[in-house]
Image 1 (cartoon, rainbow, N blue to C red):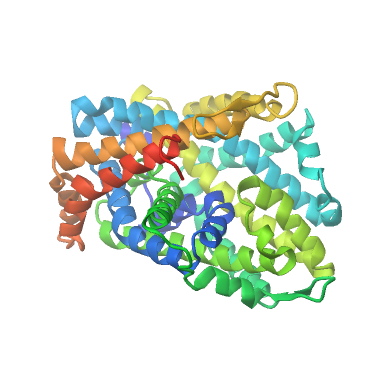
Image 2: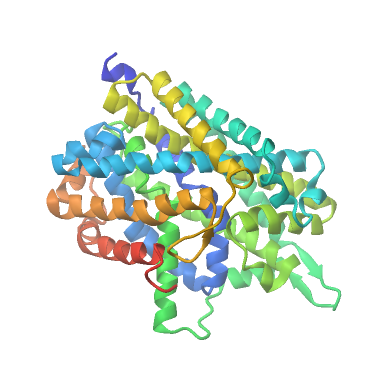
Amino acid sequence: MNTKEKRNSFSGSLGFVLAAAGSAVGLGNLWRFPYLAAKDGGGLFLVMYLILAFTFGFSLLMTEIAIGRKTRQGPLTAYGRIHPSAKWIGVLGCLIPMIIMPYYCAIGGWVIKYLTGFLSGQGSAMAEDGYFSGFIGETVSPVIFMIIFLAICAFVIFAGVNKGIERMSKFIMPALLVLVIIIAIFSLTLTHTDTDGTTRTGLDGLRIFLIPNMEGMTAQSFFSVLMDAMGQLFFSLSVAMGIMVAYGSYVPDDSNLNKSVTQIEIFDTAVAILAGIMILPAVYTFMGSEGLSASGPGLMFISLPKVFAAMGGAGQVIGCLFFAMVLFAAITSGVSIMEAIVSSFMDRFGFSRKKAAGLETIIALVVGAIVCFGYNLLYFEQTLPNGTTAQILDILDYVSNNCLMPLVAIATCILIGWITSPNEVIGEVEKNGVHMNRKMLYKMMVRVIAPALLVFLLIKSVGLLAP
């Protein structure tokens, strides 16, 4: 089977942008962005995030997508095509999504469980204390839901780039955006009065989200906000995971990469901000300032069901819409993670798509089951170098997100900025007569600023730099 038969391509820029944006719009936008915005001075965090998105984020996105299109390879082999000494970057670039996929499927299974629960009218039960810990503590149910999520992702990947990834993205991404907007608007209309007579509204929560709070701001805390904004952007854009290299390898030569990357940035940033408008006002209205301290699974599966229960009858409907939206975001990200691995297997070992997808499905199934058992049969507690207490899922997340991803991003910047040349990427962007905007900014970012910021992020992520 030749390369043309094995590897397809997106039909045009729209399919690529929606697929890449779908990868970028994942759980991180929904359960971490609102928390960081509330913690880091609201509008101040947003301003930093926006500035970084169109400088730091632009550079990393453009680099990986250009590497993919230039080499027409998945991440495992693409870096070696750029320079023989960079093959190890490709190995890590393929290893990262292989580590992430199993635990992402476990979390995706949790989302399906909560969606089916709200659809069947069990929203109030899901809001009770101990419900989430009780569910993940079961031995069979979490594995079943994990398998369902994995099967959905595998089905899309088996269908291929055009009939699978692109077709799914063109349906799911508009639907996801509509759901986010509907829930965000509803959140702004909320009002709640505590037993002591204190009244809070969704608009009060919106002010916390949007208006910069500079009270007590020091140079150290400003730097901490900068690191939080950069860390959130870095993980949100799906860079250093092999995904954008894989997707870039499917982009037609006549597509305008400069325009496409800008559209991906705008889409991802818009959804992140809408997620803040959707979640933060609702949580603040019903749980006050204390509720804003939740993030991650605690926010998604413990705090928000309590918020929906406090809404009464409307909460059941909003809960259904919310978890449907979360599932859409999880599927688009899960598919992109899996495709990074499948494309690597196809290009490196000459596997057919079916063989590569089948192998990765088996790997994700086995390791995903182990992740689920990490909360029951295989439960243990391990203190990580950054001070957090971890189970199997947390350890995989720490190794992939905190250690390997910043390392791959730093190595990529050094490869393009110094070992080869930024012109490798610029030439790929401009080869059809397209003018690359922010060209000088790109050179400065990829050579100096981005790797320097990433080194700080790596040091902070592994717990060597105080938060």
